[in-house]
Length: 107
Image (cartoon, rainbow, N blue to C red):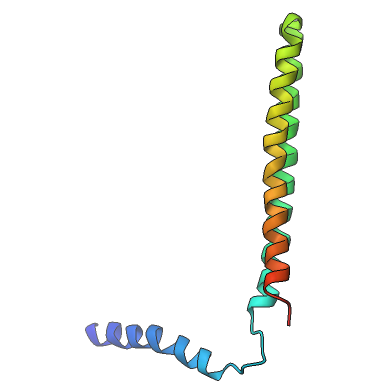
């Protein structure tokens, strides 16, 4: 059992060195394609969840307006600030996606 753990530890520590040594200077490896996949998935998840969050926020604001029409100005102001903060999630993910795509070019 102990010998198997030692061999497994040596394999884990030795294999990345071999993989990096085999890579040429001009190749991009797997980082470029995975950056594209990560940017796309991240933007899709962020956009979808932002849409769901905005829908729930507007639904709650409309329900609050129905219960207390006199507080419409305060509810609307809080809703708009909340929607801007929810939308900032998608904008931040867009910036991260652009960084992933253009800082590490696809090769």
